[in-house]
Image (cartoon, rainbow, N blue to C red; front, side):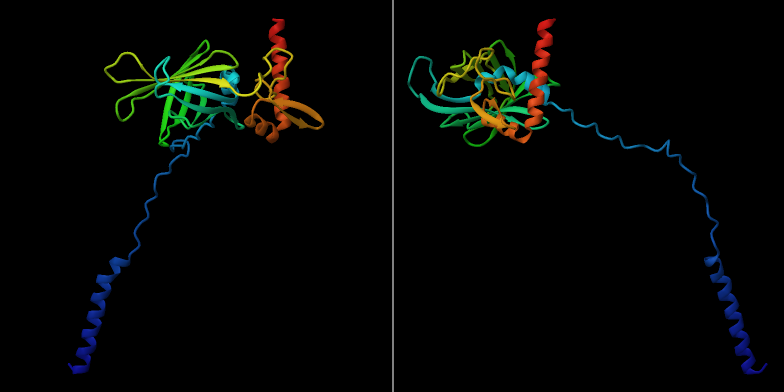
Length: 268
């Protein structure tokens, strides 16, 4: 066989072998249809429930503390009846209101227990909650209940194992006592740390239920005037004044609704 023919034949054989090897790699793979899944059987992400509006229930629970709203001057005594280690401080209680919540802000000047705090109410737990800022700017949370004119609040143990307690006693519109106590895990009773006797600054405010003005926001004792569309209303603090300025028509409507409910209650 001529040499050229041998080379040509060898080339054809190589081409055929390559075709046999490569072709299976390129053959289409039969597609398998994935089983259809029903959207009804697929897991669904639950939409989170919106947080309920707590303002109405918080306002109702905090209404008992309208007598605290205002400015106070205090004298603190670590030991009852003794001036040893005593100090003077001043405090302000003011409403802090938003569209969905209500609280009372506590600001202290020259205080040795707190520099500020926020008192509110948890409707689900039916507990009052006080978040206090200590002089070193750390936070401490208290929870508790109201019995008569006394609000008793207690904290969880701190890093030193101490539980802390606050007892706020509203004697009358002019006098309020704040007792600070603590105890270790081994102690069954709280021991006195200090007690601050507060006296309201300024003149006596109008008695609630008398002919004196009431705060249109909280029904507390009116101490400053606000105006809207030529009408004059009273509020008890700067917090209520800000709430009124933000939504005067809503505040006026809410006050009218409270009056209506009180009248219906009296009829029953």
